[in-house]
Every structure is written in structure tokens, then in C-alpha cells.
Length: 371
Ligand SMILES: Cc1ncc(COP(=O)(O)O)c(C=O)c1O
Image 1 (cartoon, protein in one colour):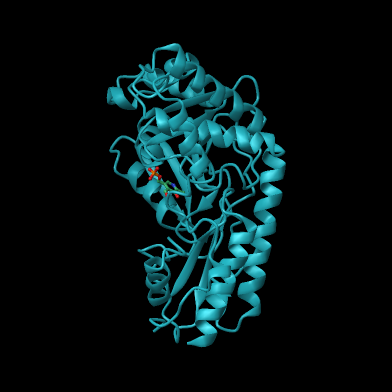
Image 2 (image 1 turned 60 degrees about the vertical axis):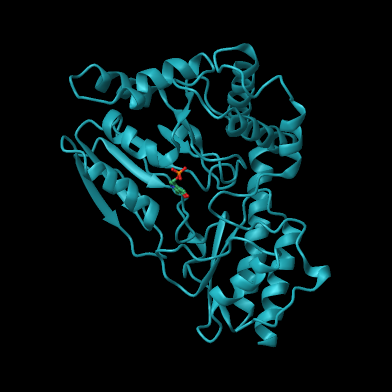
């Protein structure tokens, strides 16, 4: 189906990238990076050019998220998946409880469950449903996911945890546009290739004094932790605006550009408002069309960062996606591969413009209504 569909010129989005995997990196950022010429790429991460960039990025994030002064912005290589293990090894004392509702939150749970010297508990919601994280008696670590990227479910309510319990949030695809009060989290971590428009392979972990103390406590035990996963090394290097081992400077450059951009536009509040405006438009559209429906039934659970929209089985979404990609008009709106749904998963990340999203909805309508 859809093989004869042509995207009209006036509906072509200004940027075809609507993917929720890595999000679009603005072309202007790439131009700016090229303009640094011989001054940045190819420089040691222990030298001022890179350290100043890292410092600017850390200070920018501090401002953006209104991070309390006694929290540290810890950075390193490896991304969120790497952190799943690093956190399990270095921040859980005896037991972690995981509130899961999709592929990524479950992956995090599984990585802790594989560690022989801690216990991991999975408190699972059905895919598409929301989570209600809470303190768990006997657990010293609560894990929740701000935005479950595989299903498009957001979890906004933060639980009140015991004084000696760590509340950790995988914020990979929500950080920056889904509301979250960092002062109520102990570990708020993300990879920067989503809202923050950088590339993968890097992590940011914003940590409270309680989390920093926990890292120190576990590092002082005889538990084996691979050096590359040492929180002590990650923290001491981050405080000096460095990473433990060599980072991709381009990734940090893009992240810094995005933080500067978002701060200049009105910061976190503006980013949340813009995300809500786009999400309202997309979910209203899906509700209005009889061949579409939001995958997530409960309105409050619907993500304002990644929208999952079911399509009537009469119209194979995959066929349309292929046609749109072949015409270089729209990339990356496939459902999460393991979800196996006839669905569009559409990124609402900050740099995906409202106007382009409107065009995307019109393209899909036209294609389906002509089919
Ligand atoms: C919620 C969530 N957690 C973790 C990850 C894994 O991130 P990375 O690929 O940077 O390890 C992703 C990636 O999409 C994600 O969306």
C-alpha cells in the first residue's frame, strides 16, 4: 500500500528527522563545530579548550535544571545503558526496586538482576500503562523512568523515599522537557542524544549529596567494580570538568549548544510549555481521526516527549514509513521494534518544530485518506 503516494512539496518538513532514537542534531550546530577548525577537535580533554567547554555545559545544565548547589553534575562515557550496570554495581547497597513499564525500564531492572550480590525487584506495569513509583520497605534504591521511550509513557509523580533510600531516575528521553524537580531526585541521569540534541555514548548523571555519599560508601567496601565504572573516578573527574577517559568532544559540543539554545529561549519552563503544545496537537489529531488513536489510554501517562499513535490495521504503517523515507521527507517514525505494533512513534523532542509536526500529520492524513 501507499506505493503511489507522493509527498506534496508544500508539506515537506524543513527537517525530515522525527526519530526518537537519536534526535535531530541541528545542521547549524554542525556548521558551528566546523567553524572551530583546529581549536577544539583533536585536543586533549585535560586541556583548557575542552575543559572550558565541559564547564560551560555543566554550568548551563545547572542553570537549566535549577540544580541545588550541593549536587554534582557527573559526566562520563558510555550512555544510559552503561549507567544501568554502573549504578547497580556502585550505588545499590542490598536491594533495588524497579518500577517498569516498557523495554528500557525493564532493561535497567535486568541489568541489576544480573548482579549476584544485590537483589532486584521488578514492579511492572503493562506496556502502555503508567507507573506509580513508591518507597519500598527493605529497598535502599528506587528506580524509575521519566519517559519510557519504547511505549511513550511518562511518569511525572516522584515518590517520597526514606532518608537512607536513593531515588534514581532514568531521564534519557524526557530530561529537558518533561517536568521534574531535580531537588527531589538523588540520581537524575540521561544520555544526551534525545532532547539535548547531541550524539550518544555519553552520560550526564546529576547527583544529590545522598547519592554521592552512597557512591563513596560502596567504593569503600571490597566489592569488585571495574575501573571504568568507578563512581569515585567519574565524580572526581567531573568536578574538574573532565571525564575519566577520552570523550567524544563533538558530543559535548552539541550538548552545550543545545543547553545554550534552550537557556536563551526561556529555560526549562519554556521547553516544557513547547513540548505540551506539540503533544496536545498530536494527541488531538490522533483522537479526531477514526483511523488513528493514542496508544497510551490514560491521558496523564501520555508522553510529551515521544508520542505513540496506533494506526487502524487496514493501513500498514510500515508501508507508509518506507515510502516517506524513500522520498527523504520523513525519517524515523517507526514503532519501537520490539513492541510490534501497527503504530507511529513520533519524537516531540525540543528541536522538532511544531510546524513540521503539523506537516507530518497532514502527510499521514493525505496518504491514508487517498489509500
Ligand atoms: C529511557 C531510555 N533509557 C536508556 C536508553 C539507552 O540509552 P543509550 O543508548 O544511550 O545507552 C534509552 C535509549 O533510547 C532510553 O530511551
